[in-house]
Length: 415
Image 1 (cartoon, helix red, strand yellow):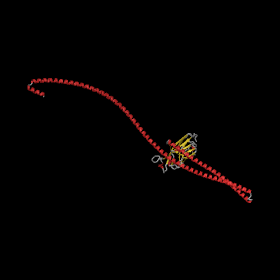
Image 2 (cartoon, rainbow, N blue to C red):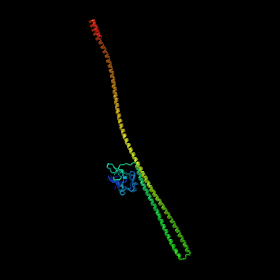
Image 3 (cartoon, rainbow, N blue to C red):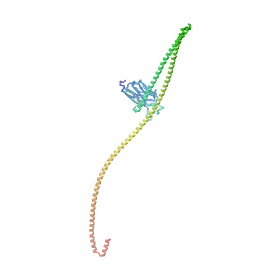
Image 4 (cartoon, helix red, strand yellow):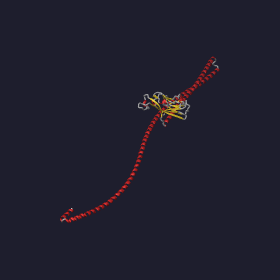
């Protein structure tokens, strides 16, 4: 065995046990060993099925859980080799689940969770619900689990272990008290019987003496005064002894009556204890039912919380995505605003140039208008100058033609 300190150890599941397969209804060993291999005889070992204490080893004594009487235990011969495995007899469907093993040595506590689950079904999913496997043999697998236990569950574990230890101690104290009472009463009865036998022996001896005296008195003179006095003394002695015997008989009857009363009281106490135990079991079952309801509610609350957390994460992701888009839009808006400002500046420049061009065009139009007016004036002047030779030519022709033709030409010209 290694010489390592008992305060330095870990809990492991042997490799060969991690893939072990078992069947319902058979004896099962849920493995757990100390590493390094040191003695666990002076340690405290606690096994829990979920939050219910299945087995407790303390002060070198194995205590079965209240719901596992006659079905769980540890191999005390293997403890010196660090084997703290839990032994199950007739493993049931209700025993499937997760087990927590705690080993306490002075100020150090180590623990490991062991999962006992059914092998995968035809759909490739593990079967771990008793309702799915009831009525048929199912192979089970053992494996180390990384399941975590909440603070509420650990408080229930401590309460279950304490109740298991208190119940066993209460039964022990009660048995010891009953044994002491019976032992003391037995001693008193033995002493009374010895005293009664001694009294009977004395009485028989006195009666024999009386018979001897009477025989002697029959042979001698019965009227002798000394014999009468002796007979009176003997009679008195016999009466005293008879009185003492009656007193002891009365005491014995009284003690017997007290014993009967104490026996009745003891039976009543045992009956009350059994009733209390049944009530305690009923309360425990009710507590377990309430704990299961609370655990279901807690699981439902955790599930709702996880769903809400998931929704919040999705909402947060959408908000972050929206914020990113908003930032992109703001950047795009800033870019467009800059472009618009740039375009406005360009437009203002273009408008200014356009206004200048318009003014220049207007000036040119005014200049052209002036030139056009001048051209019209020139055209009129030229028209007048052109009409002057025609008029002169007409006058010459008119002076040459007869007066009738002249009138006809003038009429034609007028037309």
